[in-house]
Length: 358
Image (cartoon, rainbow, N blue to C red; front, top):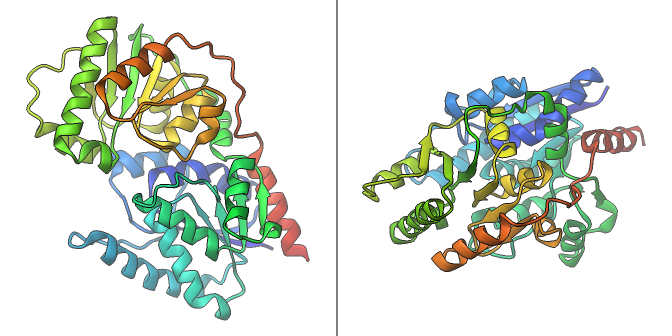
């Protein structure tokens, strides 16, 4: 029987690995789930575990308030090395570009000659080509250290080949977010008490950590919402909440700030919105799959597929570009196809089972 170990530490990993974890359970495979503790608050990760019916077997419980990135990484690597020795799985599966992914890959590098495992990277090859982003370094490192790379699209595969990664390690399978949304479509509800609104998320350091920039973005969105006579629903990320309190904006008017919501409430709000505004990579994908136009408040994206099919537009941080992007995208015709495939988890598991039989 195949022994699979999943390593995760953030909401996107829980969301995107959940359909593959459920499929493994359905096939009665032996699985272990390690939560690194990179992020954990019940109203965020805890609620997502509950919603997606995923329960970790091991929780690293790393608490690092000082020098967070360095201390988290060192502690996580050491604890993961011990767990990999204990579990000795056939496959260690990582997803995405978080510090948990980096820690898992580095732990595997330390111990790969002492265990039978192969390192698997789901969502391999996505690139923003901006090495100022910590996630970009995490992606590149994880891809170089992985034995099996599941790329979501042809573009991602091309990125990997351009980095001299052996093409025999790469499989184009799509993105598991397609499975998550399809498998739970009955939980995406109609929002009855809101008729017309935009959906907003902002959390990235380059968006919210520079007070002048963040204030300008928020004021621009308020101004546009007044001009269009439309409300903006803003489920606020904890780090964003701390930043927005310091802006001292007197009147948020049409900008309605709400507490972080469950994953399915978030999908429901997105699905029923007229437009999605975000700086999140994952929400660019979700907007595309849910057939909602998206305006991305960033200068680059690791989801170029959404730009090619015109479900998404990059506007940067300047007020005039944000306004222009919103006015253009609310007129867009929603006729694109999902570039992220379907039955992705089945494709991944089929490949892993076949490789394990050799």
